[in-house]
Image 1 (tube, rainbow, N blue to C red):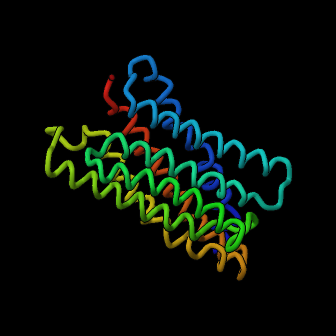
Image 2 (image 1 turned 30 degrees about the vertical axis):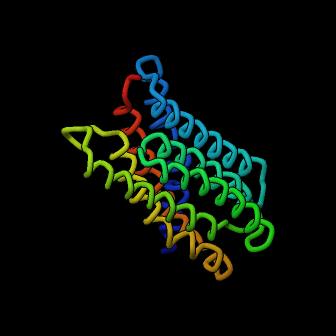
Length: 220
């Protein structure tokens, strides 16, 4: 464990921090060939991830002791961007209305938990878990829609199917790590680093999936 914390963990965090470049480069290279709403939303989401990662690196460079406040900004905006992707991809009007309500709910919850439950010096575990559960629900609804009315002969060519698979994998995989982070940090930094290790590995995998979704996005 000592070897992992000293040698592997820092390298893993650095690689994860710059893994945003995988979907970002793919998006920039495709920007002249794609002009669909889905592509633009996914590219906007990718740019947002890049800005958050750069901000995180900047706070480390400036010697900030705690940058958990970034997650309090990241979580609601990430939810809004991904929820908008599903808003335009799901056909049911009732589901679309529910998505709009959920956007307002998650935004309000993020503010309230940041003030009353988990302040900006702590990981916003509660908000992340609720937002993650809602995103998983949207992904499952897209799977149901695809099964009911398939629009692609091969599912691996459907950008939303690829993205939804990644959303379920990432949100379900990180739920436990986020829920345990604050308690782990209170016990020791090493325990918290184990939680972060799970998150950064899944970050890298999800960004590869995001790149795959960008490449499969329709032209217009």
